Amino acid sequence: MTCIKKELIDGDTALVGVIGCPIKHSLSPVIHNAALTELNLNWCYLAIPCTKDDFNLVIQGLRAIDCKGLNITIPHKNIAINACHKLTTIAKNAGAVNTLIPDKLNSWIGSNTDIEGFLVPLQPKKEWQKKTALVIGSGGSAKAVLHGLSTLEFSKIYIVGRNQVSLDNLLNEINKNQFLSTELQLLLNHDVLLSKYIKESDLIINATPVGMYPDTKEMPLGKKVWENLENNTTLYDLIYTPRPTEWLKLGKIYGCQTIDGLEMLIQQGAASLRLWSGIEKIPTKLMKQAAIKALNAQYN
Ligand code: NAP
Image (cartoon, rainbow, N blue to C red):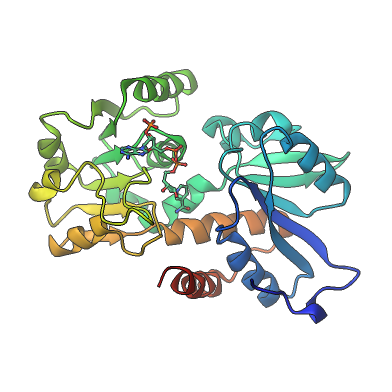
């Protein structure tokens, strides 16, 4: 168990934290407390376990004790929408909230920093104009990924899912919110032309948990389909346990550019901290160092 040094907590210490279930293995306390110490902010960031049934009660209670800000993670990102009194445009469009900012009158403003976090490693934006992207997965993070991609002017996006129902749900949401004007093609993961689409893609994103600890030998879509990988393709895996995943290791063998999920994690956290504190310059390098140290201790 990690203990916070006692002398850092006093009567003025305020609370910030992340709410989820399960939450024990979250890296957010590690990265945020590293930043808070560096910024000399007398706040303490905790992982707060909370079931769906208790969600409203818990966030109302935390607002009542002047909690300075919350992150929201699995499985509450969607239900948090209804618990907020106001939503930022980005949270409204994304249909998901990962950040709560205290508002007046005991209320919370809901925002979403996942999209901003996802986009940071894809700068400069103009690199992706008129290119083709392929997204694997059709769940919550695939939605955030598609919102991010909608700002990068791709000419075509493939979305590969394992079941038709969740692909249909995703398509309905895209049509309802009209946030993506790019040409789209939805495919099932056993589509016979998958290798061809992979070959023609400039950016491929894994937005599934396939390959994540403890099933680290797994590869999204299976190993065979990656035999046609081109060296000018960029592979972006949202997973950061392990770093790199087997899929990214394979990508390196083919000469591809690879991006793992750690930068997204750090950048979404930094964006939340910016919203809560009003401080523009967040020590992201230090947050990353703290995360790597914790990951090495947990998984090696
Ligand atoms: P999610 O909402 O549960 O969606 C997961 C998606 O992956 C669904 O489309 C699901 O298909 C599909 N899937 C699950 N297991 C699969 C399998 N064995 N084979 C093929 N497809 C499978 O989860 P999420 O929130 O999108 O998270 C996905 C991954 O992204 C996780 O590993 C998470 O840790 C990571 N993530 C990272 C960050 C970061 O900051 N780096 C942020 C968010 C998420 P069905 O629709 O059929 O269930």
